[in-house]
Image 1 (cartoon, rainbow, N blue to C red):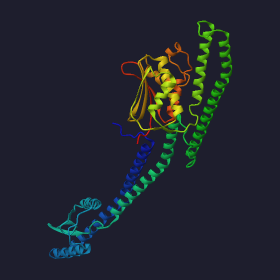
Image 2 (image 1 turned 120 degrees about the vertical axis):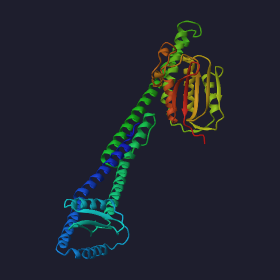
Image 3 (image 1 turned 180 degrees about the vertical axis):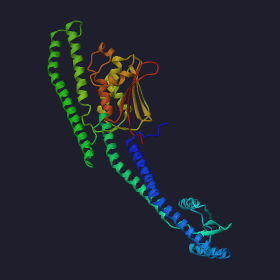
Image 4 (image 1 turned 180 degrees about the horizontal axis):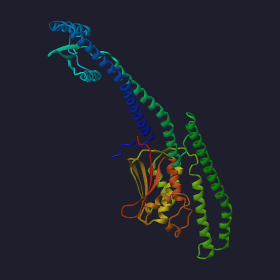
Length: 430
């Protein structure tokens, strides 16, 4: 079992708490070494000196006069304590009594603490073969220093922990914002700029991230603009080429003209993919959309109504970008038709993580370790290289539009063989 926290906040909090505890223990050791022990030593010396003086006085008087003298002395000591109720020793007072007992034992004098006598320390003096019990002062009774010291330590520890928590929170909050922004950026989103405030180190990190995000957005815009421009510029010469091919011969009969016409259509389809990829984030606003009607339009657009079974669970109108979502699903349908095999189906319904739209086929499928790579732009599978020509953008377009909706595209093995291209959208159903 791992007790060491993984988060920076947990580790710093644990470190600060440990330092505070060590500091309090060191403070207690210093208090014991330089305050408590010298104080107990002074009390023990004072008690020993008092007992020794009384002993000398008793030796100087006649034995019959000693009991009255001791009785009067004990009464005076009890009156001086101002207590007539049993007194229970506190821990620090016990240390003082033990120190006094050890000091008196060095002179052969026995000491005994008696709670029933109002909380008094009694010492036994043996004079001329007779035992006499002499009352001594208690160890600075009923003073508030130990409790005050403990309270001060507790307050100091609480203030230190609170201060450490507030300091760590000031560091942890911008780090959490940075993590959320990087995750959003990695998912293809455009997070809002981070606040460039706080300590200089945090400001520097936020400033660097904002510049990086802005540079990535500029590079993405330039790439999209270039791709759209090149694709658009190719359309004119391609149209002229197709016209020339159609005028040069019969494009329906087998021969060179038919092959050239087929290649022109393939180039035109690739250009359409380039334009779809460039238009995947064209600023279309979400609006309530009937998903079942959208799926039927997708199959009509792809000319796949007869090939695909369409199953859509009853759902309310969902906030989607209809044109973008239609492009994404058409690309998934075309990908299944090109590289898969019947039976085909497209299904949609609610799930624990949102709305799932799945396109199924019974083709050879995709190895799990290749699924993420095939979603990237311009990446094609080994079988696709020998199959129908394409640019390797169909799955990338669907994934990009899915991420535009806050979702994701997963390529999963289909039960019984084949592939499931699952588009998951975190659309609230409430």
